[in-house]
Image 1 (cartoon, helix red, strand yellow):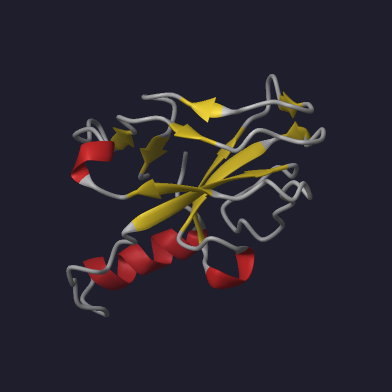
Image 2 (cartoon, rainbow, N blue to C red; image 1 turned 60 degrees about the vertical axis):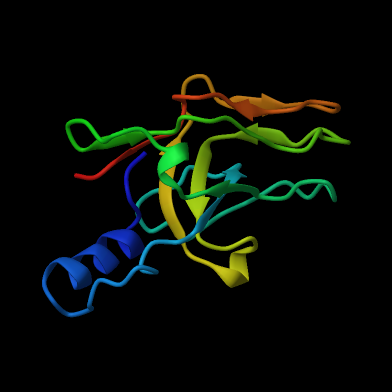
Length: 139
């Protein structure tokens, strides 16, 4: 899961002294989302399910939820589950982590393309991202 351009630019601001590191510079909660579009580093075109029960899954950004980074990558240590679908959600080609619950309230920070095979979510389905399935890599 690479960083979006937004996240990379924010890191550059911190790394090169344009913005001071503070205890609140990383989001306290990431929100896991799904998109029927293939995301790239701009993460500009997101298409999330229209089902009323779909919400981005809150995932606390704490040491307990992430393993120690190795070779520029870090993985989740606890699972995250979406609500059970009440209709078919469609075919998903991307997953992302955002710093807001809804599109207008946050930026997409990390993204992952689910290309082969794509994730097809039907009616009455619960999607769970198990421990070790979310890997963030900084390149």
